Length: 140
Image (cartoon, helix red, strand yellow):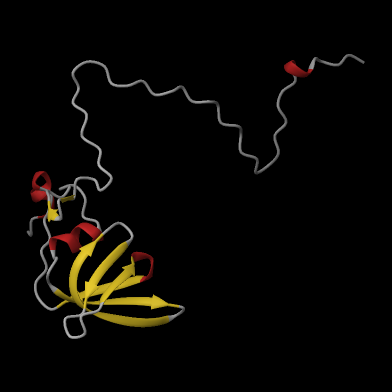
């Protein structure tokens, strides 16, 4: 009986096995005079405590909340199956949190987005559509 050397044997596969992923080539940096956008720890959203330009192509909750800073809202969150309401003024928002201040008590709440159900505003909310896609969103 003749045995093939190990290197020449076909790999064994079993049902449900994921084939090995070949190693990736390292990415090459851009060549030429291609502009590279600046990278900040806060994605250029906040500049010295003031609202800077929001990314127009993204309508994430955090960006919508930033557009509506200073407005009264009710934030509904679930903790262990119980729903709680936090009522106050939206002061700030990040990728994983919302800061709401209660004007009656002066308390400020740092709320984690992971517990967020929904938010109700007392007035019309600010929501900007991407300028290059207005035709897609325009009412018919």
